Image (tube, rainbow, N blue to C red):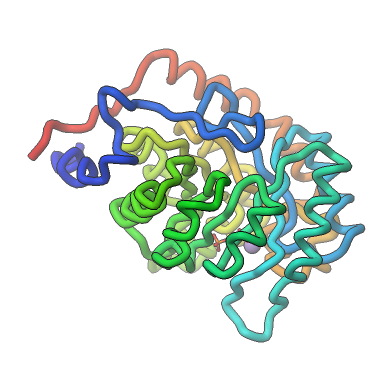
Length: 292
Ligand code: PEP
Ligand code: MN
């Protein structure tokens, strides 16, 4: 165990674990994340059309997802890629919520969009490229919605918790952390899923932690396997990309599951969730070291 854990993280007092504050459930509408349920958020990388979104929403709801993901404002690596439908995409997300009852998570890239997106989203996603956008983090302190904070692709866990502390200090303690893969020398996968981030974060912070296996993998065949790993190590849920016809997707098709693949992934997760419940029952096996 790293003897520096306590000293490293305890300065982020609003998000670090303490004897008074060991575990927090964050509510997305009436859905607790970080409680006993494993909550799956799923949907397309980007909202492309009414038909694409509603078809995906119905399929993921039927398979057991409780939150619909879909980007209306897309941060893309290339300026020539699809940038999202903007407010039209937000309207489609609202329609999908009305039709399926799913809550909505969608990304906010700029502090100028916070108020608008908060009118449509139940959970405000901060993407990997924005984790250190402090003006955005501060604006989210007053948005009245919980925040899904993704780890920057080159950020340490300390930097992730520092960003969480900024949102909390700005007035919003409702934060869910997301491990989505980090950049390493490995090129066989799009990113490297830092699976140990989950038990470390669960040990040093009271915030819920979920895993995004899609952006970690970059290829769809790995997504169910990484999802199982996330379940076993104690993740509170998943964020998964699903598209009715991934080969035609305008973004991240290669890592998106078809609706059928998503259903199978959900069906196959149960024994791994049982393992997670078993290890939670046995109590924490990691203990943060004493202060340094
Ligand atoms: C996304 O969720 O589609 C996304 C852009 O994720 P990330 O910020 O992790 O790359
Ligand atoms: Mn994506």
